[in-house]
Amino acid sequence: MDSPRGRIYLMKLAADGKSDMNPQWVSHFDSCLGCMACMTACPSGVDYSRLIEATRAQIERNYKRSFAEKLYRRLIFATFTRPDRLRKMRFPLLAYQKSGLQSLLRRSGILNLLPKKMRAMESLMPQIGARESIPNVTAAQGTKRHRVGLLLGCVQREFMPQVNAATIRVLSAEGCEVVAPPEQPCCGALLVHAGEESAAIVLARKTIDAFERANVDTIITNAAGCGSNVKEYGHLLRDDPQYAARAKAFAAKCQDITEFLGNLEPRAKRNPLNLRVVYHDACHLQHAQGVRLQPRSLLLGIPGVELAEIPESAVCCGSAGIYNLVQPDAANALGDRKAELITPLNADVIATGNPGCLLQLQSALARTGHKIPVMHTIQLLDNSLRPRLSDATSDSSSLSSSSSSPSFAADS
Image 1 (cartoon, helix red, strand yellow):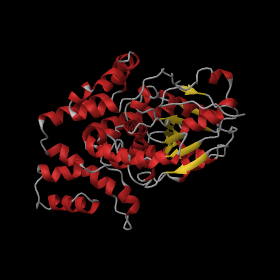
Image 2: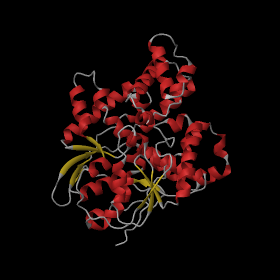
Image 3: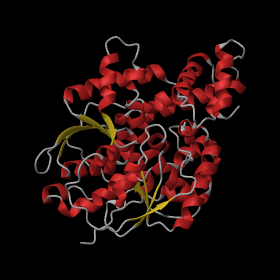
Image 4: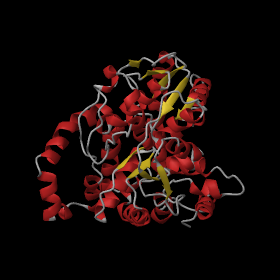
């Protein structure tokens, strides 16, 4: 029953009134990663993503979770889908990390007294670095080729702003004017993937409104989970007479950053990096969006980069939206397996296209005693292009030297 076919069978039983929505029935759907690897493998083309999301929405509407579980999920959604609240958390988290308190508590074992799910949340905490301001509009360098919008995300916007900054620098260097609407909210990805459909619909409408005012040709995403979500806005808002057509038009404009750059003739010079790079496929990029070759092509387009493949690359790292927060044991097992497969590859750096995967891989590698830097694919390309960028841009573009955003000087 924990296979995709088994879960579809359980869906049918419930739809036909032959099964109750009891704890055992619900557990089979809670244990699903939602990684969509089954869709890549399915010879019949079954759209499991819509089935699992519709089923999870029914569960959240009709199944009574325990008070503790309901409270924990509410904490997750009230925090990680609110950039304004995440912004207020920056200073306390920075103090926790820079004061040495985090290191002391981790060494002492005191954190083991916390509930398992809270320990998981602490272990996945990103290293808080300097804030990088994101301009509302960034001019294209040279002749303007496109006017694009950038979806900023939530955790990435506040805790890993270097990814958005790198994305903007690369797009600008490639002749794109970049608009980052400051009023854009969370896109609703975490909510949709966890069955919180009503709240996700509200955020989807606000996101569409923000980007319609921006009047852009293409909407760029750089977080795999967010990208797969916004590309499905047409389905999410299909029954909304005011937004159905607008949502479909919005979704048609959305592209992952590697997908967009893969279709754009390179203009900016790539400088050598001379690195052995291991690329990790984010599930919602390779399976949900079908974007697999483009990130590899971009990395191989950087002189000096040697690309190494991870065995079992189609298998999830265990991040999967909020999965590593609500199913920490299974998530840790998957993360440890991924770390075991990466370690023998002797990588200088690991590249991936999703902030959740980035944090999950960092946590798994730390548990196994390995400190291989993990960064977003676009950060590597940004490092390669940096010598070409203007002084005005590069003065404010230095990446943090933390493990989540290492900076590699290009060998000219």
